[in-house]
Image (cartoon, rainbow, N blue to C red):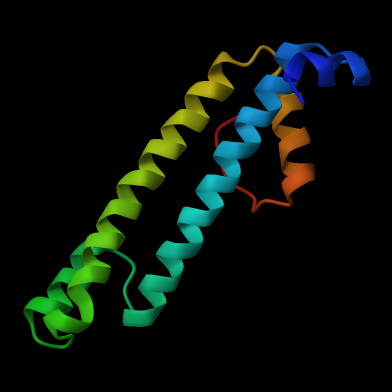
Length: 117
């Protein structure tokens, strides 16, 4: 179903639906990235790419055990930054950002983030 058809059926402005849908997608993507970061970090007992790299360099983790995860961890950190920037920019552009954020929080049960809103 297109956004315009959905908006007409529900009696909403198509721009509002598009804005909320986009933000929900970004929030869900961010949560997925954070979950994978946590999974890799807890696997090796690290919180940063640098910590994982140090454990590999010092021999605490073999290259065969950690190199693939190191590259994935690094990629995910950059992806998280990108998603956070997109979220922040979208919130700044949103005309009704507080209501939009409250709506997103309640529909996704997301963690309490300090976004300066």
